[in-house]
Length: 440
Ligand code: BGC
Image: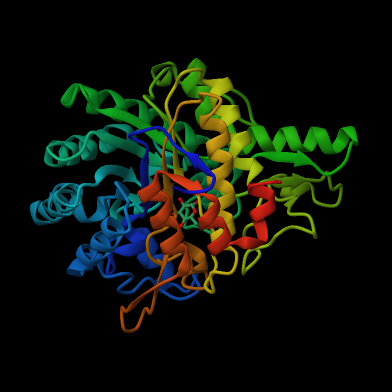
C-alpha cells in the first residue's frame, strides 16, 4: 500500500500520442517532406521512428508493457490517397494491422484523421484555402473510417486546427500557400466545415463512434495590470484559442476579423480533446504592430524546458480543464497531448507528476476527464524543430533506430499501472517537488 496516493476513476485511459508524419518515416508524398527537402526544418524526417518499416510493433510492446491501456495515433492522408483518384489499399491494410496490434496488446486505439500533414497534390492546389476541401475530406474520411472502424470507435477529426493555420499562414514556420491572417481564418473556417462533415459521416457509418477534435489550448495571463496588456491578452487569447470552440458552441466561428457563420458545426463533438503544454504571458508592445500573435512570452524565472520551448506551469492544465468544463458542461474531456522536450529527462519526471496531480484535482471536482495521452512515446520528428527537441519517454537514436528508456518511462508506467500517482513515485523520480505534491 502506498503511503499516500492520488487515484483516478476506474477505466481511466492512460496512453501516449503520436502522429503519422512524425513517426512513420519516408512520407515522401506530403507537403512536409517537400518543406524539409527545401531546407525549412532543422534536419529531415527521413526514416523517423520507422513505423512504416514495422517498428510500431516494438514500440507498442513497450507501451503495453509499461501499463498503457490506450494509444492515440494518426493516419497519413497522402499514403491512403496518393493521388486524387487513387486509394492505396495496402496502406489501409497496414493501418488495420497497427490497430489490431493495439487491440491485441489490450490498448484502446484513438485515431486522428488529420495531424498537420497533407498530401502534396492537395497542398499544390492550396487545398485548405478553398471550400472544395470539405467534400474531399469527407471522401477521405469515409474511405478511411470504413477500413478502420472494425478496430476503432474513438476518432479525432483534426489535430490543432489553430496551430496548423497560425504556424502556416501567420508565423510561417509550417508550409502554407497564400500567407496572411485573412487566409489563416479562412483555413480554420474550412477546417471547421470539414470537421463538421466528418463528424456526421463517421456517426452515419458507426453510430457508437465518439468523435471530436484536439484543441491546442493556451491559457494566457496579462503581463501587468495595465488595461492595454489585458486588451492584448484578450485579442490573442480569443484569436488563438476560440475559433473552433466558438463555432462548435454556437455555429458562429469568432475570429479577429469578424464572425463566420458555420451553422452545421454546432454541437459536433462527443468529447473535447485538449492539448496542453504551457501558459503564455501577453504584453502589449507598441513597437510590434505586425506581431499581434507574437507578443507572448514566458517569465524569466520560469521552470524552463531544455530548449526553453515550454515553461513548466502545471496549474495551466487545471485551468484548461476548468475552462472546458465551464464552456461545455458534462462533455467528456480527454487530455490528447501533454509533454515536454527534455533529452536528458531532467524536468520530465516532475512535469509529468505535477501535471497529473493537477489533472487529479480536476477529476476530484467531478469534472469529466476520461483519459490522458502523454506526448510522446518515443522521440519523433518535431516539425520545423526537427530532431532538436526530444519529447519521448524513450530516446531514439535516429541513425541506429535504437531506443533507450528514460526514467520518465518508468515513472509513467508506475502511474498507469497504479491508476494514480503515489508519494513513493514522487519521492523516487522527482523528490524536488515532493513537498509541493504532498505538503506536510
Ligand atoms: C503537436 C504535435 C507536436 C507537439 C510538440 C503539438 O502542438 O500536435 O504534433 O509534436 O505539439 O511540439
